[in-house]
Amino acid sequence: MADETILTPQALTGPSTHLREVRLEDAAFLSKEAGHCDVARMCGSIPTPFHALSAEGYILCMRARARVRGDRLKVILDGDTAPAGIIGLHPRSDGAWELGYWLARSHWHQGHATRAAQLMLEEARTMGVSRLVANYFEDNPASGRVLEKLGFTPTGERNLAWSMGRLGKAWNRRLVLTL
Image 1 (tube, rainbow, N blue to C red):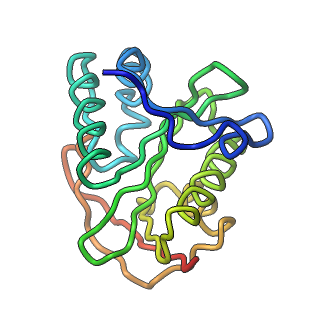
Image 2: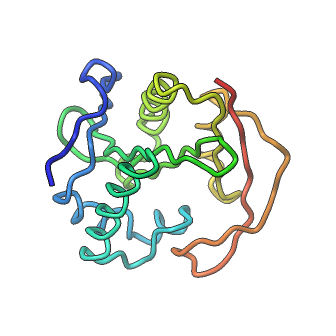
């Protein structure tokens, strides 16, 4: 299956952070980095370990969701080529879109999440998205700070959310952004 570029290169470029379509060849990166317990426990749907075959299935599922529902899934690149993480926009049944992301541990605290999310917000605007939601686990305040830097505001909602990486629930906070 050939990769389809959704964004122009100009829209994908930020200061030392770029985005590109996810590819099957990214499965090894996803398996190793997303499957690390420190990363997976901060996500809802990523198990640890995250085997390469499961990562390939995830990529294929996301490609199908892109065609059917319009989901967007991108690899965050540090510079032009080095994968740093994944970011996505996912439609919800209430008309809002959900922003989600994760970074490999070696790329934490370098601004990649904020810059990548800014690029995804540009994409959301071009798609005509008017409302975004995002969630973060309370024991991951760095993710909450990223979202607040982007203009997301807390809704006051706090719930126990499932995490495959934890094999259990943890307290989660929801934020919203109106574009």
